[in-house]
Amino acid sequence: MSPIILSYGEWFGDIEIIKPVIVLRSAVLYEAMHQKEKVYLKVAHPGQENKERLKRESLFLRDAQFGKRRCDYLPHLLAPYVGATITDDPYGKTMLGNHLLYFYLFEYFEGQPLRDLLMDNPQLWINHVGWLTISLASAINCIHLQGLFHYGLTPDDVLVRIDDEPSVPRILLFDFGILVGKQNINHIWYDDFVLPAYMAPELLSTRGIRGDYRTDVYGLGIMLYEMLIGKPVYPFKLKGDAEVIEAVRKKERVRMTREDVQKIVDITFRAVSPQPEQRFATAADFAEALLYFFGPPPPPKKRRWPSANTIIWFAIGLLTMAFLIAVALSFTQF
Image (tube, rainbow, N blue to C red):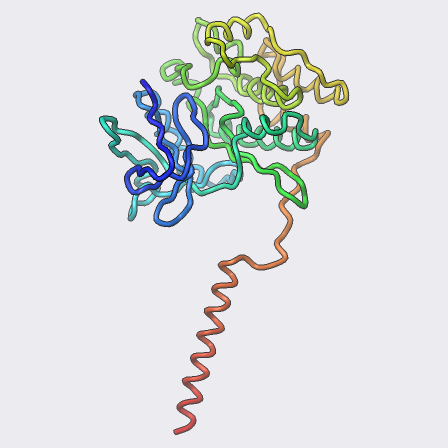
């Protein structure tokens, strides 16, 4: 079913579209305006599997938002309707043409898809590669801690910006793959949501899908591999899915060209091993191996000036105080 892609100035219910950010196989991400606030809008493509996946994502984000364990790399969910709450309505529905489309909103994050960043700058600074991968592994670990799997990580799924002073990549993972646990993986699995070039070899098996955190470690490894060489590990543009799947099965990947960071390359090769048992056991273990070389991403620099909201409230307080003093002085004159 052909996805419906909206453009600048079009309306989706009471949400005004600014621009499509990226079109995925199962959904499209928009930059939009809702009640005079810039937000992100994620809309599932037509099709029951796509709708159900988006619903799972919104419920996961709602629960993560109210949970005790904070994850800075996940979106902050917003209510889909005026007067609604994310507790009761984590996602919304609206008619567009003949289609009932499912969507959710989340807070704006200044950044661009990693795919676009790599097109503009294929050879990222190695520290940026390391910190970005560690952040991604932390985001995937947030999913794993709930007993869920992603199984579809690609450069299209994450927004990135490079901060100044310090120069550090900041990420927001906005697509969560299949997002189911071990017991339901074979009942819910469908492979149309992910590009075959990023699928672990075991996901191409016809013998059923097993629940294993090592499959997501492969996804993280493929992302690291791509950032090291500056191009997709399995080229997929202008190729059909069957051709790409055959290349993955035969391990016909682009040759690793980095000789300056051999220990990082060794970690990468371990993560993308065709045999799951040879990979790191979890995303956390993978991140720990990289932390040894890169350390954690440096935190954002503290602001030298208070935020705009703080300044506004301070000004309101001064005006209120001045008004009360003026009223008090007026009474003393009588």
